[in-house]
Length: 230
Image 1 (cartoon, rainbow, N blue to C red):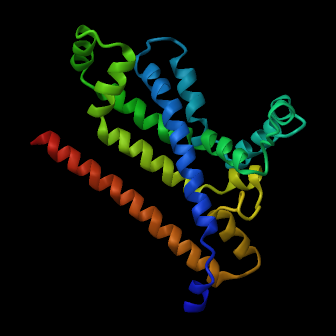
Image 2 (cartoon, rainbow, N blue to C red; image 1 turned 180 degrees about the vertical axis):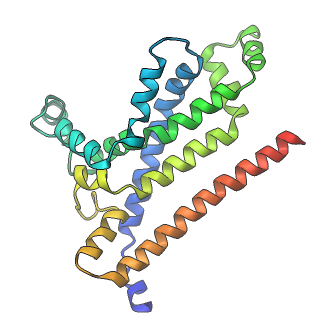
């Protein structure tokens, strides 16, 4: 075991954390206005948009990965456009991983944020508008600070989910060391070559990280509930 520990490559873990960090940041920026709109609108199309954002929860990763692979490939209009005008290939590189992760992790950011916005006291929002604050100022300075448990849940769970993703990542990014070979893909490759001891070590590390992330969410939310009841 000690020999295996000394041979651990930390690059897949660092790449996983980098991917999770970039994905979480992008999803937060995109999801705040979207979740706010869905929480406030009374449009008949609201259930349709909610279903679309929740699709990754029920679709197999292979289905999402397949359609992303087709959509982002060089043969598609989108892939061809980015390749010709920006020199960016959208598959089998880190950029493709970020795009795929944003699609697959979207509901883990959207749903807690939307739930947090919907649970806010409407009087707080109305008071903000009466004080002359714009919708943007109300969201940033009033809504988000008053829904910290939902906010932290969205950020931490999105980060953890992205770290642990495998299927979509493998289909869109493959396994290129230093570029797309994240920790979950590294474990898969170890199992394929029957290097179970190394796979066990990597899996234990991922298990510990996931447990610490989840327990931090529950501890934080528990503290916020006690503060709210005090």
